[in-house]
Image (cartoon, rainbow, N blue to C red; front, top):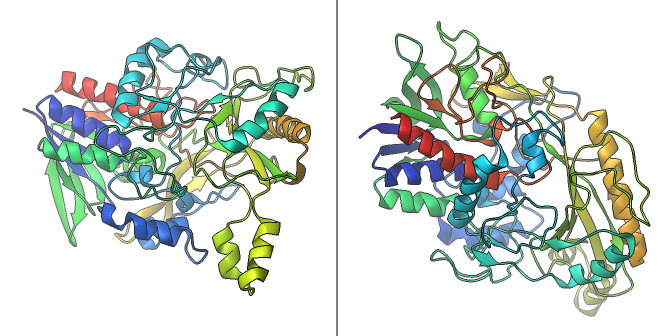
Length: 528
């Protein structure tokens, strides 16, 4: 029986650990952050809806442990939406889980091509949907082919979705359901969604998937999980061709863990950082970095949005997640309709979202205001309940100049250089944001919305999907890992993460991360 060290207890690390335990391996998971108590989730939810608290604070992010710099042309607020701890960022994610389009993997949308086809990933996508518990329907005409229905039926369209439907039909924008990693019915010993509406940053019912559910299953099979044990570096053997041990800190002491195989599942920022921190005589530029591409090609999904008010109730904020979206322009972003002019510009893929949350928070309004009683109620009625909005994700082209590197001028709580995010938003992405806004405006105007705000080329922000920093390739000079996620340079080191994405399309990455994790576990099992 071989011993495997997994770094990171988010969805990738949890799924790898659980699958390897099923295959009889001795697995230890080292997680930098704490183990959160699910019994405190309702209290976290209470804090989350009050204006005095921020999402990072709810999940104990910040301070020297999580320090970073952002020296690129555009500031990158790294800590806004990541969580260090058992479960990782699935503790507070939105929970949308789509498969990449076939054109994404072929490199036809935003290049370069993956060294994998959709058919290579297809069985692992199905297994990932079962492992996470996905509610969905086969009603998206633009999605890749499926082999069988989702594990659970899709959530029905919301009331505000119904308000969008007539306008979308008028302007030629298809609507379809969104696959969600949350229970529409009891599944995997977890309840159905009860509609608290605080999905991000905390699901207090447990209906939404979080990787701590998989960690619990893995521990029941004998997997050891060491929380609050940040890995400082990986140490290779005398040949420099294999990792011999991981050095980590726990309870104030530096310890080592020897293993036959190592799996880094700590995300698209901390994985390249750890590889760079592990430089040695055999790997002077960082572990697995003979190509010089560790940290390079960092890319994101950018947000496009627009909203305003209607002269009727919209029932926004009654649902804490998205139930309908449109991939109408995903593979053909310049396509036109009878109401929307076509564009021949060079554009990236994008998807449109019909948001179930818009307008001011009534709790924040009540707590921040001076009024009481009927005066407060009248103000809430005037300002709340008529808002409506659309969102969307635009895929950013992978560019070598966007990268994660070490900032030697600043250190974390263990004296290591912090990650520096060098990031800019390119012209193609800006054009595509403008295109998404154009279509959003057409829909909202057809609805009769008094448009009050927009997020587009000049004021966009990231979706916090960290991709591309250890990209996958067949050629060792063109990437960091092989198609099985094993590094080209180091024979017993695998990186199942969005960090290996050659491109990220324009869909949320977690389902693809999960599929790669299960595929990587099979590769580790075969190799060891």
